[in-house]
Image (cartoon, rainbow, N blue to C red; front, side, top):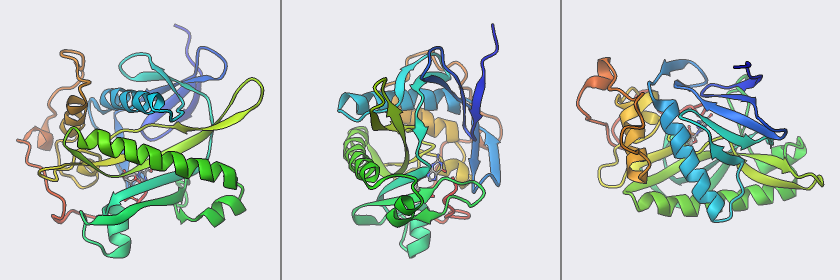
Amino acid sequence: MARRRQIYEGKAKVLYEGPEPGTLIQYFKDDATAFNNRKHAVISGKGVLNNRISEYLMTRLNEMGVPTHFVRRLNMREQLVYEVEIIPIEVVVRNVAAGSFAKRFGTAEGTPLPRSIVEYYYKSDELGDPMITEEHITAFGWASPQDLDDIVALSLRINDYMSGLFLGIGVKLVDFKLEFGRLYNEQGDMRIVLADEVTPDSCRLWDVQSNERLDKDRFRHDLGMVSEAYREVARRLGILPEGELVELKPQAGKDARPFAPKKAGEPVKDSGASSA
Ligand code: 5GP
């Protein structure tokens, strides 16, 4: 098979040239990084699960009218996406205090917020993704005021929809990070679409009953059972067809012990840094 041209390699994904102009192939790796790359590991099977979970969530979001870059899943680790001009901003929506928010404001993890809070971070590994405001975004021209209006409206719709979807399967959507891009049609018209991924790498997902973490915090804070937690999210979403995830085997070492996750509010190591 002819080697595909690699367009970009990120921490958890690789982008290749797509089969048609205006498309890309998004490949999900098993790599996990945290704390601005200071922590790295390979979590066997994570890429397969994230590919499926992002496919599922992007499809549901598309159906309820949120435009996304997702076209279709191609295989276990790859999906076809539209090529978009990525807006260099991470949009974080929070429903419950956790992570860098809990650290910044001294709020106990797990405290419900009076209303959903939208934050922006500038995508820059060198700078450690600094928090920014709308002023920075429009002054530096990263997005126009109109783009930002669309981004906030979409982010809040996504939050409402996904909060309900996850609550229906016994999961609290604590917070999440979104990325958006500009998609141009042949006439040159532009619209803002959801890009990147929506997975337990980019969302904090807690079991409603026990507050067990079912997301990347298990990796960030050495809670163990990382791929099992992602698998549990996929199972609850109903997207784990029998026999399909053959790559997922119990991992040796600490991931092999019985599932005994930490709960929200319990002390975790190095709670904080946003460069996830
Ligand atoms: P925090 O700012 O509390 O570290 O993160 C808030 C939310 O955004 C969490 O759900 C976290 O997973 C997500 N997030 C923040 N930065 C990144 C990032 O660089 N990559 C990914 N995958 N998720 C991030």
